[in-house]
Length: 422
Ligand code: GLU
Image (cartoon, rainbow, N blue to C red):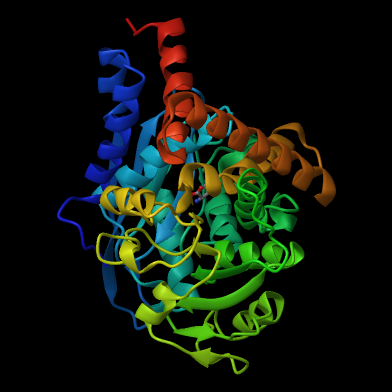
């Protein structure tokens, strides 16, 4: 639900301009980063189960690649459009720069509702979309990954289609054209939980700094897909209590707490939906947002915390598992109300960091143990948090603006070192 007058890409510009002003950014570099490099829109036909042919529109927006190949997810959702993809691609550039990864930023997807399609149809949509993208993606050029409503199976289809359309000798050199693959098809252990693990790692760092004891801390989660469910799993490891969960199928509430692992099992056997989970009561959306808790983890879509909803929140911290859940105006409301916020580009950076380690293993034909992958993600995300936090103190600003400053400084430096071709 979009409630602001501006588009989401314009919201990104508001965030960007605030940080660019603060660091007095080089105007030429500022103009480069305020635009996306490539915007690919493809229209392609797919034969549906009933035999009729339906046209689909797919997007891949590549924002910037000064620090390395374009990187970012593909989502399947009716809300996917060019503006959305531009915003999400830009956030990926900041995210990979903050995480210190040798990547740029990209994002894309197909505009449709996968819940209304069969598995066979989704497979054909995925394969034909990959075919249409052609050489606009590649293992050293632009590397897609899972996002909203896509997962390891989607990545396996993309990989298979991409490989099948290469020449014989190239086929086994391109395992790293996508990350977030199933383990058997070149995925890494830990990529499934990487984003949620990163979310909780940043929450733990924030809690340390702000003297919040996570054991027995209460929290709520919006969205119980990959990010929400794994975040809740790792919050349970810290001893925190899940009071309420909202997804498209319903809203669950329990004063005593909901067991995230049990709920994850339930969701797995119910098409990912939590609405009919028996061990909790139901509340309204407004009650969910107004619930008193220590932490709120939005882990669904963008534009959820707005001028209308920000005044309702009754928490000490918002940890953005989703991309873009808070509008710039809502950011200000939260700040005025003294509510802390860990921004998306830092909070959910564990996912793309996990992707990076998958990509590295593929490139080197290596296989790393789960503990090794998780420890490497923990280290990167913790470093990212420390950098952003110290930048916030140095510039006397909020964590979102500080995260942008970290990213923009890295990107500006690279442009200054290299100059502009020709
Ligand atoms: N879609 C995820 C994100 O928004 C992961 C991207 C990736 O792993 O490349 O960060």
